[in-house]
Image (tube, rainbow, N blue to C red; front, top):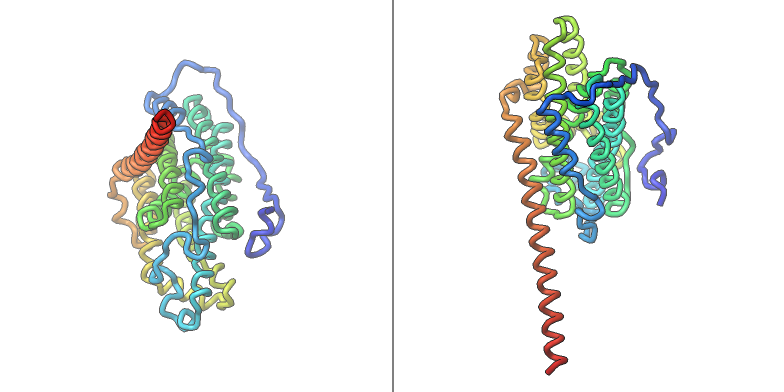
Length: 370
């Protein structure tokens, strides 16, 4: 079924065209590069995988409870609307909420693919071009997987959120080569990683858990890449240039925080916008969710050297300043280990099935011989 038939509201023009600025850069030095980045490039090659084969798409998904969402996590829980909802209405709401979340993941992954391609084009160093090329493939795979989950398992999509689209547009319109790194690798992907992780660690549904765990294994490398490249580059910038980038981060973080409200979903259930925004703001679960979503961004921003007084004040205002001391390397290591465990379990399960098939064939053969 065409995607446009599955959108909850008209997304408008099927093609969003962002004017391209900046320069394409070539490097004629082919035998030089940072060892850390070349090692990450090798890891990016080694860790490629096929979304059709690695994901168990035969797993059933209940579209009215795709993520095992607890009632308390829904902003309408306990309101006058919730008490009037039938069980079917609540199931529809869960479906819409999961569709909204995974639709934003899908749109973000397409944005990441375009930004990674822009990095290949604009970054001056060949080692960064090589790694970025592997990331383009990663993001293509992620978009494929989220698109398939939404089409086949939920059967519904939401248009891109206005704030996400705004940040993505600002990232792509900037002519400076480091801005796709900063906007995508640090802000959008850092926030997405935290969102993926919260769902991965709370869902009891095996298919979304698989998808999120494997995608996060890739994303851990992407964030590491952004940190390496930007940390090296920002050491060379003037105070004025650093302040410009801090302003971009501050504005982007406020946009991303405001994106995470899901007001569009409640509006589709006939709830006035003002009430929908109020319920979203009052929800203790969503307040915690929004706060934890910055667990990957704040330590990364601090690590790359964007830690001036204004950005610190902004993070105090958001209530996430103390996250600057989080161990980002430990979080990334855990992401990779979780995916490795799932892959080991999958391999062992397939091995047991193959052994069982062989034993069954042997037993049948012995019966015939007897």
